[in-house]
Figure 1 (tube, rainbow, N blue to C red):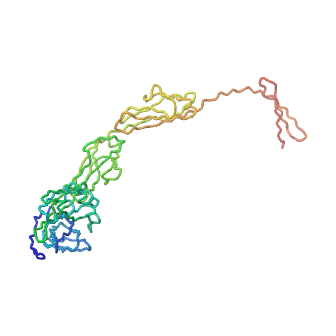
Figure 2 (cartoon, helix red, strand yellow):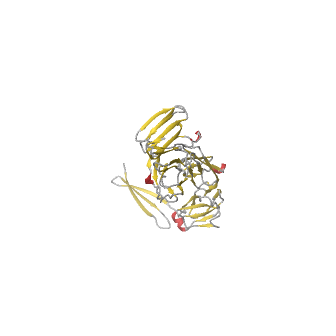
Length: 434
């Protein structure tokens, strides 16, 4: 190709159609008259190009759409898989490279070499939020978040950078590695000088290696203990969804990778249950399974509340611990004692004077012997009523009653009564006569 007085050979080895996609990022280099060629592999392929504006077009199988680059950052989206070939370079010297698809392509690390002191630039793109996780030869200061710009048309989801390196940071004849500790990325290299040879190639993979990690492969939990989950989805997709065969629930919903599984008591019947993490997103679905054994939790029954009399307040207990354990111990919120001890389920509880005076005491039965489970408790209340009070009644002798009328028509009642080991006493009642 002839360009501004330079003649350049442009070409690249293209991939099979299995590696094609429908979304591409184009970062313009520093060459004059850069071009992007979009080749359709199917009929009725819609093309949308977003940069400082938006361009829409349609091509059929075997047809090519040519985009003359004027914007530094461009996003290409098509309705069907396409080849994208970018002619770039330095000054009038040109080179060309097939551009990898945006999704499901790339790696967490990529190597490149510098063969001469000519200009060397790296084109790097990744998901927004991960641009601060890059290192070049272990140095995090050489590729920083400030080097990246948002790709238009992606809703802020992706960022891209073009950064040139001197021979101090990247020496001649050096072997170099770019890494990202959090997500995969695409990497292109433009190397050369205007008027001389220029090379341009994408060294990152045209197909990614998706993976899913649900955590350990097998584990055990008690039915009354929440089980923490730390899922990882990577290699192209970064989102996932939890599922499985259990009857429990996921505390933060199905799509939170860092989550908690809340076992159901039904899980103890069908144990072990499977906890499955599946990737979601544009890449092929990957799954990972955790086998979870769910042990039954203790069931504690302190029995029914009781009411006793203060003069007969000793209480025979009838506690029970079963399920995930068969042992436990009694405690009192009062100050009484357990006979013969507090680990006998049918012990005798003897209330203290303070318990009796309070009229109410609460006993607590707590499970033991299930180390993997949370302790389980149950309570019973003992109500202590007052003892009966002894009352003495004296004999009463009634005497005849004499009724006298006076001038005011009142009746005077004189009643001689209460002959109790003593003289008669009189009580006079006056009531009106009507």
